[in-house]
Amino acid sequence: MEKIKDKAEFIRLLIVFAAVMAVMILVSRAVAPWAASAGIDIPIIVTSLLLYVPMLAVVFIYSFIKGDGFIESFGIKKIKAGTFFLTILLTFVSMPMGWFANVISQLFVPNILIQSADSLMDGPVLPVFISMAIMAPICEELLMRGFFQNRFSKLIPFGVSAVLTGFLFGVLHMNINQFCYAWVLGIVFAYTNRASGSIVTSTIMHAIFNSLGFAVMVFTTKVAQDAGISMAEGAEAYRTDMTTMAISVVVTGVLAVISFFLTRLVLKAIAKKEGTDLQANA
Image 1 (cartoon, rainbow, N blue to C red):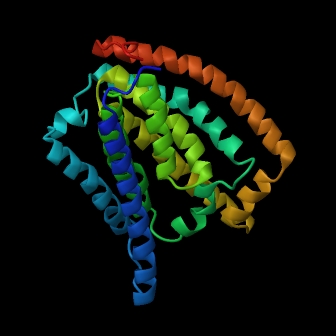
Image 2 (cartoon, one colour; image 1 turned 90 degrees about the vertical axis):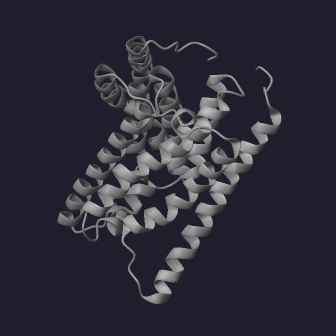
């Protein structure tokens, strides 16, 4: 592995990430108890804003101090129409790798998203959709790929930076279940942006992933309610059935291998469409 080009900047970026995590933890732990004590039911969109705005403020302030241009430094660039459709294809092609990571994590811990489905779906679903499928992808991609990935890739080989920022993306979710598949998807997102030259592509992918996750939550919650059980109970029954889990591991594992090679093909197609060098400094 090549040496870090600027060790001081590398360390500063890690400190910035630690600051982002600290802000997220402080806000998340302060808002809920305050709302409960005041008897206030804060809408999920407001909660998301209270969380994401301070986190993004940390990286925006750092960028401002460094004198970096927002559009250029965050990798915001138009993509071609063909790239848009290839990105949608890539989303579905790469999904099995995320499924496999999700199943593997559930050998040890519960499915966090499904465990929280009952509370999330207990009310209007549109605000939940906006928060999950629009706000989260935009804010998290600006943060993780726009800021961290674009800066780390200038200091260390791209492949290493993709693995590192994927890992940090997993850490951002603060639970082992989401950590596993977020790490995998974070690497895919990084290479997608490498191929397209823009964080627009990873934002599209992230939005589709979260939209499908939302749709699964709505559907499975309805099924669970009709069956007279909670989503948490159903998910835990599935997870603790070793036969079912063994089958899931094998099936998603085979699909993940196929997904890996198909993902490479679509990434090459995106790079060709945008005229980028996917292999440079990889």
